[in-house]
Image (cartoon, rainbow, N blue to C red; front, side, top):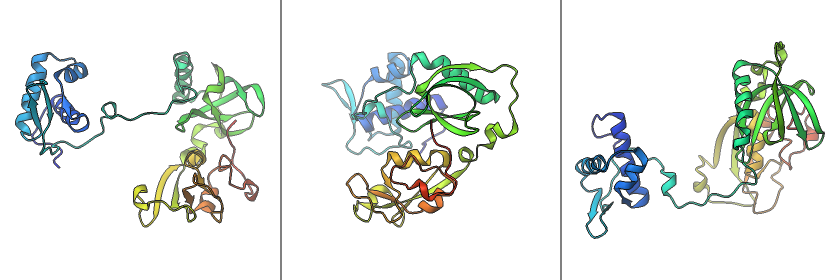
Length: 286
């Protein structure tokens, strides 16, 4: 497969690649698709289709009856293949809550500025265990665990770096003329700034097709921020027990280097991990 067939302006190449991806993932190409995507005229869309047909004569065929281009029987991509998600009939599961809605934009913008300017904030927060409270924080970063957003921050109440569930933050205010102490600085959040490797293996009591998981020698290495490891392991139902003792079809994988990971990552979110065996458990989410 060739990534490019000739030197083309970037904008033109983007349009030609879009034509190819439509044919590849949808099976048909209409001028309206191109016009709606790029805001060009009907004549320009026609010229674009003609250009692509000249570059790859076997990739498109014109259906006179339906008045549309269709994928050719000898189709071979001439550009690097990338997914065109909106043209694939895939169903996305609904979420119980939106990580971001219109009411949260102002709140996100204020926190985002504070992260980049290294500023402290006062927030009103509803914790599952502690109820409603007012906290002073120094935000580190937003994090998406694929189910909801979190805000990683230094919490002056806990005197440590913790995760706040973003949807539970009701109010946010900038603390004017505040001084950030060295131990509060975002750069000192070791778990956030440290990357670790998770060694994932097929569960010995629930074997799956190893090739479908793209494992190398039956082990797949996942590199992730230490602060996000617990969320990842929880999301994928990865058995973190020392002896792979969990049973059930939901447990298809095990963490092969659990002891190593537990040295640097907080695994208390993983329900099957015995926190009591750790001498110095890391801070967890509120």
